[in-house]
Image (cartoon, rainbow, N blue to C red; front, side, top):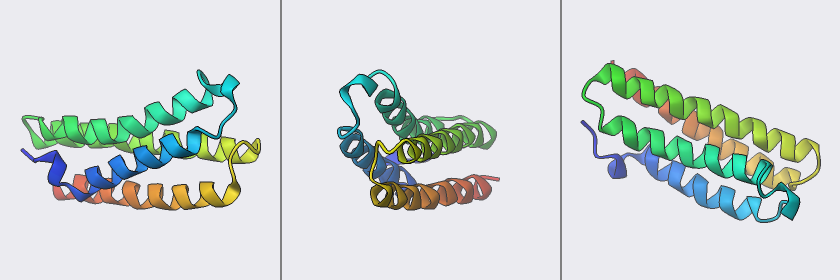
Length: 116
């Protein structure tokens, strides 16, 4: 169906994974199995679902994986908000990451609409 490595949205999602891993290293050690793990898992899930969708046999199945990627993006956004609100991450860094995430969400929606 699609070669996921060529998709700009997948490339951006991989960049976001790298950024999330960098940001999450500043979280307290006692959050290793909490917020740190949840943020990393959600970020990876965005890229992974896009890639998995590219192996789908139908456009409908592809869109289903894109919806899961979108859900993971919203989950990650919530983790960013929580980390900012409990003052575990710098608000400026969170703002930048959330801006990148908004763009990725828009790209996912656009790709899903194009798959109709």
